[in-house]
Each structure stands twice: as structure tokens, then as C-alpha cells.
Amino acid sequence: MRRTAPTADRLSDAFEQVATERLLLRRPVHDDLGDLHRIHSDPRTWEHLPGSRHGRAQSGRRLAHWLAHWEARGYGYWSVERGGRIVGFGGLMLLLGWRGRDALNLYYRLEPESWGHGYASELAQAAVRLAGRELPELLVVARIRDGNERSVRVAERAGLVRRADLDDDEYLAYASA
Image (tube, rainbow, N blue to C red; front, side, top):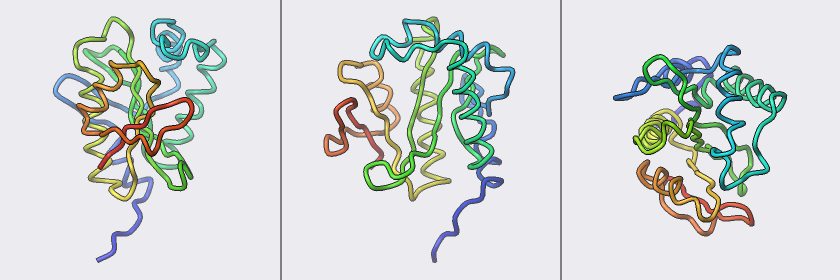
């Protein structure tokens, strides 16, 4: 039996708010801009891609893009809360026509004070699990800069495997099986 394409409303029901053991993963809102900028303007979060550090306007454009993706697709990058405080952002967004196919980009970026506690792995595992259940036809991919071993460990803990055939000049690829 062929599965019908999921609607944005149905996907939103599954993705809008997800509780893990220690985190609340929720759809971002306009009021998250200050936290998005705080985290994305911190040079420590861009160690492997220093030129991508955000100014305030870029953070605003990024949040607007994320909100539009949520509106159109019913899923996207989450605001990641621990104890009622935003500690990062992450989740899945659609990459149209990536390497000749549509895929889901797995993203995780946390404030440095939250590193080393397994939060990125927890959110990545939740995202990959939901993708497998709700969007099984799409490959999940984490594109990681060479030398970013912490990010590699997160991708591997989420069940992604190294896919050298999907690498490009900028990124190594880890993908769902």
C-alpha cells in the first residue's frame, strides 16, 4: 500500500513540540530572536566556520526563513529549551534537490555552556527518530566540516553513518541508512 504524502498540518502535530528526557524541542517563535542571536553570534559556536557568525540582521533573516519553513512544511528547526531557558536550536529542514534528491538537513547548535551534557545528541536522536516515522522517504543528512569531531559524534549517536559519496568541497556527509 502506497503511503500518501504527509500534510503540513499532520506533520506539525508530530513535530511542533517534542519532549525528550531533558529537553523541550518546540517550534520557534518571533520572541526567540534574542536567543537565536545570542547563540549564533557567539564565536565559540562557529569554531569550524568562523565567517558564518551572525550579526543581528542575519539572525533575523535566519529566524524568518525557519518560520516560513515551518509554515509551509509543518516541521523545521526547533528552539531547544532546558528548564524553561533556550539553550540552542536544531532539528530538520528540507534540502530540495540536494545531490539529486530531496533530503532532510539535521542541524544542531547549542550555547557553549550546554556543551558536553549530551543535549545535542538527545535532540538529534529525537529528530532522526521522528524523520524515520513521519518522513521515511527522505534521507537525513548531517553536513559536517572536516575536523569537527564533536559534531561527528552527535551524528553517529543519532544513527547516521559516514557517506563519503555525498561529500562536497565544504562538508563531510553523515546520513541515515
